[in-house]
Length: 363
Image (tube, rainbow, N blue to C red; front, side):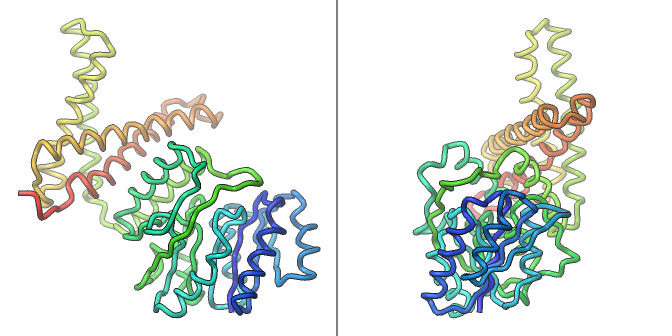
């Protein structure tokens, strides 16, 4: 017996079709089921549509008016589920209903306790309409979760598990839309399996993906890292090294202009390389002293790449806050500090997970 949870904020155009198709697939496969639609008070005609659908489908609609958010909607849907097998999926057909029998049978017959519909294993695929930026964004986001989980597609929103395995609500604190990562990280799942799916871009309605959700994803990652790695001594050391690098960066930047009359663009470029190189040396010998000593040139190069990615995150957060949130237009320094913090965090994740990671092949 299956409970299918589908968040449907602003999805009025898709509700009838996705509900009918999920019902058809599960009925043909012989599964008794219910479909729970959870709406954050869209006021787009969802209630009227569902009132008609309920007459012929095993459908339940939950309207939420407080503490809105996709992840929180999914959690409430799970809490209200009548059956023990939970499936979570999107309403826009990006997750193929045809894959439902396979994802459920994997849970039932393969001794799995958590099953993910994956885009990134053999047989999985992504819609050809996905642009280069979105593909790169997805890959980077997945990369940042590697210290949390080893699955290939932790960003998937199509997953299945037993309700009894749901983590205690007291420890759940999702931000944004990556509820699969939240449940998987905080739950005690011993056998996680992935099945291949073809992720299809929506044909109706508007995507919820945007800068705000990317910002929320970073916040969510911070919470998950602090949950999984409560000992933050290494991060504090990394931050202290970063602070010293900031002083070096400013000193070289100003010194080159004052002492050698260097162009400010040239000075800025050179100061970054000097500061990043100093940070690499200090982190190698202090923060990650107990870690692997890989080849210096290789490690230095990777650290510079990580620093550039961290700076990109820094600038991106600063731009987003000052461009779209009126408060930060007045308090630019606050946006500047937040940007530095996020950039530092991204740099730390990449450094701990890849730059200074133990590698037996390194001598």
